[in-house]
Amino acid sequence: KAGVTQTPRYLIKTRGQQVTLSCSPISGHRSVSWYQQTPGQGLQFLFEYFSETQRNKGNFPGRFSGRQFSNSRSEMNVSTLELGDSALYLCASSWDRGPGDEAFFGQGTRLTVV
Amino acid sequence: GEDVEQSLFLSVREGDSSVINCTYTDSSSTYLYWYKQEPGAGLQLLTYIFSNMDMKQDQRLTVLLNKKDKHLSLRIADTQTGDSAIYFCAEPPNQAGTALIFGKGTTLSVSS
Picture 1 (cartoon, rainbow over the protein chains, first blue to last red):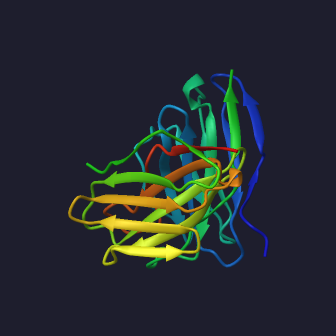
Picture 2 (spheres, each protein chain N blue to C red):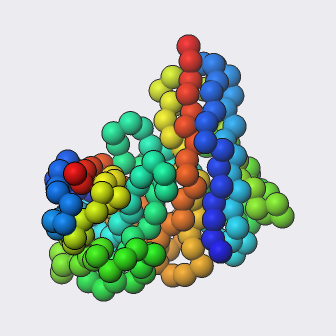
């Protein structure tokens, strides 16, 4: 079956702009989580959506937002981009977080802010 | 607070065993995970261990868990050059849902 698909793979934006990233989970998966990966901070949890509702949120400013559609596809949006937002953004999908439930990761979107 | 600590680098020769260590803080974690990230790729779940287990073996991988010391290790037997990657340990935070708290990752370099 198809894996987690993230689009676009690479993106270059200018400071102050906004950006939308997309994640299509594995068919049948209802949970989508987003992470930011940087060399300095490592992998940090952004938020998680389940059945179109935000279930958990990490410690990121309000410029970072997301949503999930009825088909479980998810988007995340970053407004007023800053240089420090340059990172690899990963999304993960799972059926649900039951014991041992595996989260499958996409290849990520590499965002560069200049 | 919740935090997961790992050493940043490990270098081994092909054929040797690799041991990657991790300490975690949330003693209520029911599962602990090891993920692998190859260059330019997302994360791949390697293995996980229930918190009521001390050891889990899966082919070349052995996971050891010391709950008292909150210490987790991943041993890779007969390490190959294809094992070169970044290895992350992760635990669920103390809340429902699918979020994971990751360590900073250990870069394993395997030389032939």
